[in-house]
Amino acid sequence: MSEPQAQERSAEEGPKSSLKVRSEALKTRGLALYDDLERRRPEHATIEVGFRWLERDKEIAGGVLGGGLAYRFFFWVLALTVLLAGGLGFASSSGTDVEAEAEDAGITGSLASTIATAAEQSETGRWWLVISGAILVLWFSFGLLRALRLVHAAAWRVPTPPLRNLPKAIGFVVAAPLVVLVASAFSGWVRTNAADPVGVLVTLLLGVCFGAVWLWVSMWLPSKDVPWRAFLPGAILFGVGLEALYVFTAYYLQIKLANASDLYGALGLATTALFYLFLIGRGVVWAAELNAVVWDVRRRTEGSSSR
Image (cartoon, rainbow, N blue to C red; front, side):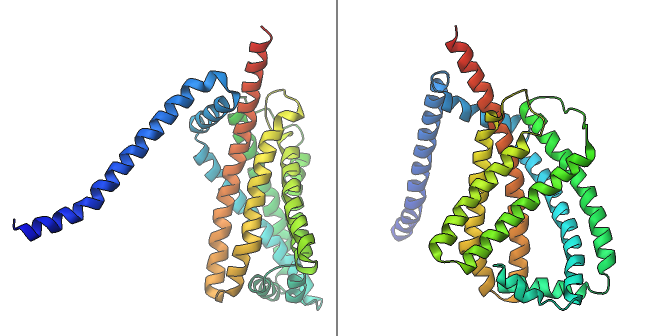
């Protein structure tokens, strides 16, 4: 090999060698940090919670459970969409300007146009859409309820108790997401029709609503015999996570989709919805695991201090 070729090869291998050295150094630092945290687990409850949280998620295959919940959420939303399409058909046949009403509610122009088109197309079959939509909502609500119960039973390491009042449980599953949707729609309306400080404040307070709804939901799902305070960590986590998704959508993604072409907007909306459903399903699993782990660590700490 000639001297110029050797110099060129050395120049190419230089950045690669430097990158390899940096990656090895980061790996060594990471392993050292992990070992240090591992040694400090018995002394710090927060570190113990973090390790147990990761171990519990791996133990019950949290990623798979989150994907399964996203699947259930998707079909529940699809059934609700069929029911709403029938209702929009009645609204359109009565002469209501669906697109204008949707925009006044804080919905973006592209999505409002899509809703108006769906309303016009569903005028002829609105009765079938309402009836089939109602049946599908009940059916998939039962599937979603069953999935939520199984996930929480796995996170808490308890057997799934028998369901005592099915109609009440189904109504509970239907009501909780609708409360979240109505609160989100109200926040969008305020953000559109009020000054910026008021809109921002209502948007931030929406996270409290999300957390409160999930606290209420968690108390009715399988768990150990614990007080309501045991569900606060998961409710806070879920509320903050859902609020972050909402803020990102309201102040960034919504504008991007509104300014995009019709094709890109439809594809972007569908992709975003599927991705959000997975994140919501994953958040449900994380919240349940966090509640169970924090309670176990708290009981262990209280037992050690009482000796």
